[in-house]
Image (cartoon, rainbow, N blue to C red; front, side, top):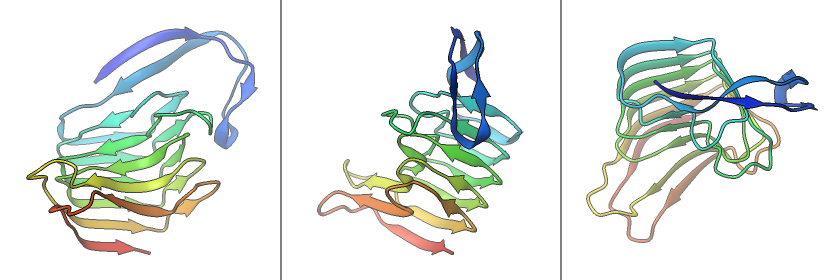
Length: 172
């Protein structure tokens, strides 16, 4: 895990009941890259930039994660998953100015369950097909999620003539 600790002072009410009103250390630009066979649970991130969790690998559960950034914050994907297998994201609250969860090429068997998403862009697959020989996304299940103040629920972004495919997808 890569973490950068910064001194941050803020006097605002943030999303989902999170508040801060005094100088304190806040973890910023922290993310997990390339891990296997792990469960990460109960972590909260406030005022994130870019992706908090990025490019996981295989057999990962991110349970009860809270990610919060201002709704007008650009480039603040909560979780970005690419080239990963058997990933579960249950029971989490994600509100950012960008995608709550973004799913890139090469994902297989990804389950997103009981996630409260918003504000932001919702859950995004892609962009798929920008680069030649991109891998498909196969086995995506999005269940029992709520979207509040999002521009989309689940969206799929592709490039023209994309060879990459989204297969075996359930959204309920």
